[in-house]
Length: 243
Image (cartoon, rainbow, N blue to C red; front, side, top):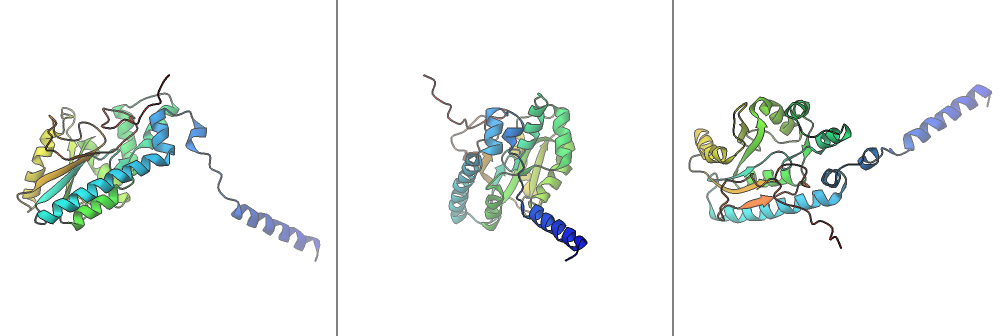
């Protein structure tokens, strides 16, 4: 074997070794000291497990509903952010620069259409459709962000008409954050689409206002724990006991 052959063999061995070396991308928490809630959602498997558990309970409930109702006569209403789409990357970016939410930075984030799925959301939505229900998404994202939102949802496998029939955003600049009026028009929107007499049987969200206000004991509400990252969360993880 001549010298050039030895060199080629050595280079090939180095290349193979490099290909076999696993990725060593550092975890998020080594990059920046995140706030407790953001770190929990970003890095603790418990967050995804708990979200999945909530959607499993909601799935059991709608299965009971479907057993006693005619297909096409009932619907569920879901929030989007931190309920269907996970925006923890936005929160991480803001903490990296020592800032919190701003409408401008949020608008830029939604334009990227890169939010990911909350664990359990897609199987739940698919099951609702299989059981004969309708899915309505009611969000406080701005109406100027609706197209980006639909494209983001499509990128994670949730398509209008196939997976959800209604998506109601918040009108800008004067639209109220209270979702109750939008919840109220969901049956009318479905009726206009050819599905009259539909009743919303359950609400799923991560915020206390992701259900009709004032709160009624008759409303079935399932709460996703978003780590108290913002807003008025409907769940709060137990805090350490201080002696």
